[in-house]
Structures are given as structure tokens and as C-alpha cells.
Image 1 (cartoon, rainbow, N blue to C red):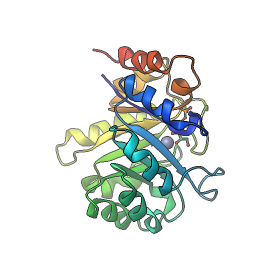
Image 2: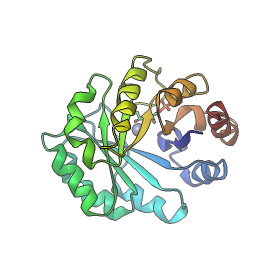
Image 3: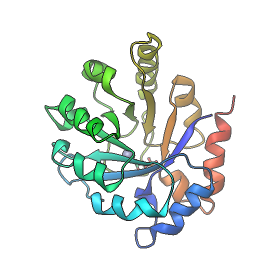
Image 4: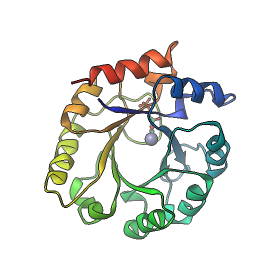
Length: 218
Ligand code: DX5
Ligand code: ZN
């Protein structure tokens, strides 16, 4: 069964706590926090202060997806704020190896993220040091976009690369995940699905989380 990481980008910004509690009650495995700088992506969202504020109100691991230029400037702050996973885009820095090592030095899980236009070959040399790979299945920046179906083959490629036994990473997918798309990403090898609008733009977020899991029950 797939693990589900609800994204607070689609939650109620003026009162996040009830949405976070409902996600946990619904069996969410992680809480996904989208960090945007208005440069790497054309939108602004949360900073490390938000991560620190959320940390004491939930026991779910905090999955921080940094969509910011030169993330090595900020990874320490996110780690110290209480992140359990920090994801950095390979396209956001010439020093991806350094950024990932900085995260690991804090004892936090290091994740490399791939935009839809980036091939798996771009991250091949960092795969041995990452805990997780995040495959973007929409262009990053906004919730509520349509799943890009061609990304399924990228998930399959990554899944094959870990069959060799040389790499040991989880595969997460992000963007356009709903009860129609979750099955195919799971079949392709995804372990974790981020879901924002599907969960929080619903009358019943708990039912939505359960539906995603049921769709992938083998
Ligand atoms: C987009 C973000 C996603 C977003 C997904 O840049 O990385 O995490 O919240 O939203 P949905 O699930 O609505 O596509
Ligand atoms: Zn995200």
C-alpha cells in the first residue's frame, strides 16, 4: 500500500492545525510542506518558522520540499526547525552533492527532487547518498495541476536502478495525485504519494487519504 503525504499547500492557511490533525487521524504517513522562494518557482509559501511552528503539534514526520534557489543557504535552518526529510531540486543548485551532504550531517533524511523536464541521468551520481527521490509529476509551484502521465516511465527507471542493490532510496511522487492516478504511480514503483488538493479541497479529507491507500492495496 502506498504511503500518503498530504501537502499543506492546499490546507487552510489561517487555521492549519485542524487540517494537520485531520490528516494524521486519516492515517497520513508524512506531512508535506512546500517551500517556495518566488525565484525557483513563480510562487511564495512557507519558511523554516512554519516548520518550527508545526513541529510540536504533530507526530507525523515533516517532509520539507524546498523549491528555492541555492537551497544550501537554508537547509540547516530547515533541519534545525524539525524537518525529518529535506528535499532539494537538482536544478536549483550547481552544488547538489554538497546540499545533500549538509542535510545528512544534521541526521535528517536527504531527498533529491527532479522536475518533469529533468532526466534520471541528472541525479545518477547522487543516488548512492540519498534516502529518497522525489519525482515531480507536475511543474512545481502550484497545487491543483494535472498529472503528467509521461512521468510514470521515470518512476519505473528509478525503480529499476534500485533493483541493482547498489542504491537504497524511496521513491516519492508529487503533483496531480488522486484516485485515478495513484494506481499507476504505485505500479511503477512509487512508495509515497504527495496529495494536496485531492485531500484538502474535499469535504472529507480522511476518506480521501483512505481511498488513495485502498487503490494501492495489493
Ligand atoms: C507543487 C507542490 C505540491 C502540491 C501538490 O509545486 O510541490 O506538493 O502541493 O498539489 P496537488 O496534489 O494538488 O497537485
Ligand atoms: Zn511538493
